[in-house]
Amino acid sequence: MLEQLDQIESQALTDLKTVQDEDNLQRWKVAHLGRNSPLMKAFDGLGSLSKEERPAVGRRANEVKRTLESALESRSGELRQAAILRALESERLDVTLPGRAPLHGRLHPATQTLREIYRVFGEMGFQVYRSREVETDEYNFQLLNFPPNHPARDMQDSFYVDSGAPRGDNPILLRTHTSPGQIHAMREYVAMNPDNPPPVRIILPGMCFRYEQITARSEMQFNQVEGLAVGPNITLGDLKGTLSDFARRMFGQQVRSRFRASHFPFTEPSAEMDIECFVCGGQGCPVCKRTGWLEILGCGMVHPLVLSNGGYDPERYSGFAFGMGPERITMLRHRIEDIRYFWSNDLRFLEQF
Ligand code: DAH
Picture 1 (cartoon, protein in one colour):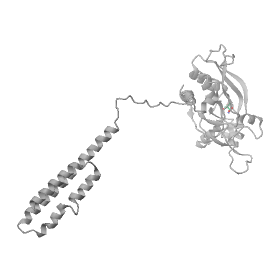
Picture 2 (cartoon, helix red, strand yellow):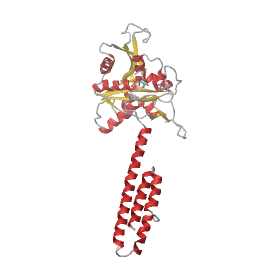
Picture 3 (cartoon, protein in one colour):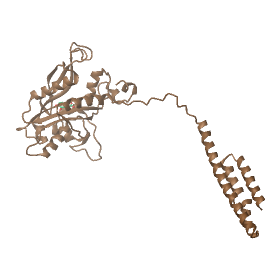
Picture 4 (cartoon, protein in one colour):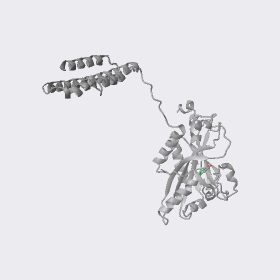
């Protein structure tokens, strides 16, 4: 009986050496340790042995079982190890190959200009006020002194939001300029302290939308940066000083600026500001159309009607406002000839900045 166990053991161990994969390992396990294996049969036969023989054979049978189990364990480990080595071999990596440099993102040229404008006005004590892009006719036009049918509306053909309901006289639209934010901001400030509303010094950046033919010079969406200062005793001198200082901080200390009378319904008086052409220094070149000057913004003293629509008593308060197009400034600075490049997402354009 003991010899038989020796043989079972050596046969099993010999077979195990030929096992090369997991499937055959399972088969080996069934054959040598399974229910019907010779070893299990030997256990079954213990009962028919004599009392004298039984303990030694039993001990030996258990020993063979443990030997086979641990041989199984280590063979299984070897097979796993070999599989890993094969995988490493076949999926070999050459770690000495130079890496692929990740593509560097960068700020959109319009964003770069916007941030520079924030920086300059930030230095002068202006905060950024974000206002909504979807507006009512009331805020976009009426409260800014564009009554229905006012001819100045023709400059700002609008995208209306079709809510299904009849348009009525206060339709919803995409803002055509950032100016409606003036009313929102003033009303918010007044709500803080209705008897003594705090002074306002804000810029209002953001996207505007106009239902326009898209050409090299005009897009249907573009950024504006609006500015608003309201307080006691604000004068046209403050407007000129602030905006000339802005021009120097933005375009260079030696840059001169000039103001030309203009018209906007929400300011009185109104002006347009030009700066000396930074391409030719005022000599005259194709960028400034040989005038030596570049128009960069519209501005004026806030109309009394607009102040009172915002909740500020025009007898006690005055203010100035301005509005500029950062894409236009970016075009002038980089001599970009077609505004459509800004939103067409062509990397050949964007990667130049
Ligand atoms: N809202 C004007 C536009 O889109 C720009 C503008 C001009 C804004 C003069 C102002 C301003 O605040 O004072 O054409």
